[in-house]
Length: 112
Length: 114
Picture 1: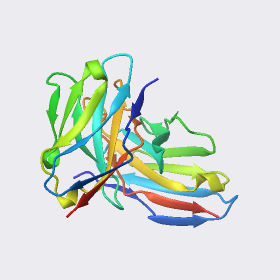
Picture 2: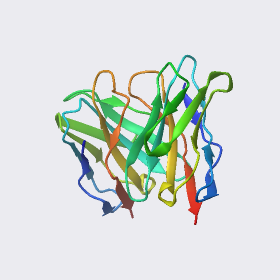
Picture 3: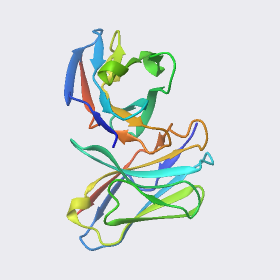
């Protein structure tokens, strides 16, 4: 069965600092991987996805993520965080088809 | 832009009541989903549908049913609400085909069962 682990429940960074959110997955074959963001009071919005090819993927709002098969990881990064990035971030995995398995989320707080 | 609309933002019901949560999408998407979101547990899939009148169980279907009579509408039904069904419910839709994993979410319904 597929699964996703987001080891950090909460992360606090200063505005302008770099950010890395961790995601580890478990899946028997090549996974499809996603990062979604949920702003307060909103549904989830897709930031980026990895299906195949280049292991470094670019997303919206200046985010990127790198797929590392050897580490079963798909960490999300941003070089300089803005106060508006404060939200909850979810990593998700599927083997194809649209039944996604989500992680438990990481709450990001940005200090001004 | 795709719009997924959930009929209520907040809902308060009593134990034993029959509860309907409605979701409508306006982009002719084939696939629709119901998730519940709980702190520390992330999102868990309750039911999903690939087509009108078709439904499949997700990871936690117990205590829930669904209805999809029209392509744009997907209803979640709690036959007899219980306090452990207090949660945030999120509806999502996706297009069939190459991008069927890209989900579009509604803003959610916070259900409280007293």
